[in-house]
Amino acid sequence: MNYEKIINDSETHVFKVVFPNTTNHHNTMFGGKVMEMMDEVAFITATRFARKSFVTVSCDRIDFKRPIPADTLVELIGRVRYVGNSSLKVTVEIFMEEMYANTRDKVVSGDFTLVAIGKDKKPVRIFE
Image 1 (spheres, helix red, strand yellow):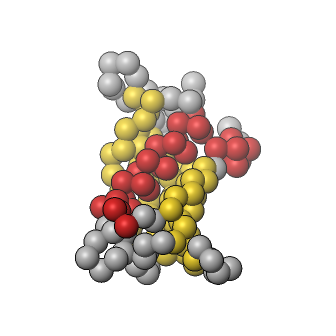
Image 2 (cartoon, rainbow, N blue to C red):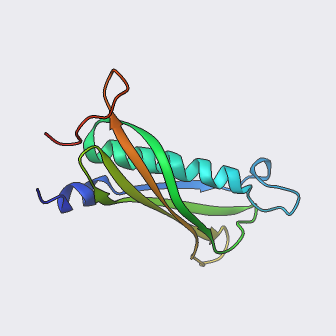
């Protein structure tokens, strides 16, 4: 099966503002909050791709290239990179933009593996 159109159609873009309540004592976003947002975008991307129920089973690697300060905008982009029988891999990238300047930098990226599950909470095939 050629998944390219489904992959393109399921690419997910989410924008967030980095408010002070999501930052640490360095005035940068908590790493755990970043990972939570990435996991959510991976889940949304997988769900949009297959229209199945998914659970996250692993995150292979998350690279924090730069801290994300308060009062910035972030865009999270999720894209399916691999499709197996019951699992798929989603790469999530985060781009940071200054609110009042025309800047955009990739600051975080990571890979998440999710498994499709049925009502019995057991793995199911993504596509029949």
